[in-house]
Length: 218
Image: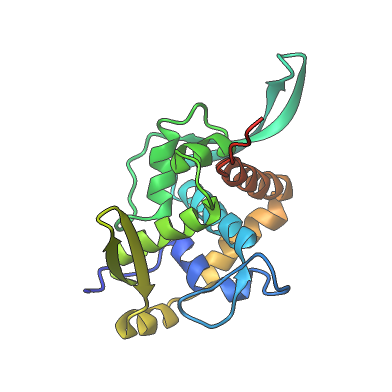
């Protein structure tokens, strides 16, 4: 596979530096990474991946993140929610990525609330929606030449995908500066803590809502 990326996009930087950004403590609820043997908290990784994508879209002038009041309880009450309003500017991302996918999902979400956009992006329920997030990320990374992907079809229906990190991409990733991503995340956490808290909360709520429910016979 040919490396087609000239620089890592923020969500990609999160994945390839997850062990520096996300908790590695505990035994359960962990996921493996392709660039290291270290495992990280899968929920936190998902939150950081998608939060970085939203913040990167905002930084690029493609979205506006804004806390607003929304009506609840049939309009009898209201609460603060985080909205990611597209600005209408054309995306300028270098190739397919989570940033572009979330921006596209905002165009057909029920509203511009972060939770609604993430739910629209996932589109369906899954036996493990967190694994689905990681699968979509890895597909995008493979399309940019950052991962190799091998597909195996079983019984002509089921497709399994295996991903690996090629040597060329490993060297390229190691040379990428982490400072811009750290600044992007920390600026939000420090200067707009309520935005950050609502951002990661809505991301988790949206992904959890895509958990497939088992039918229980009554």
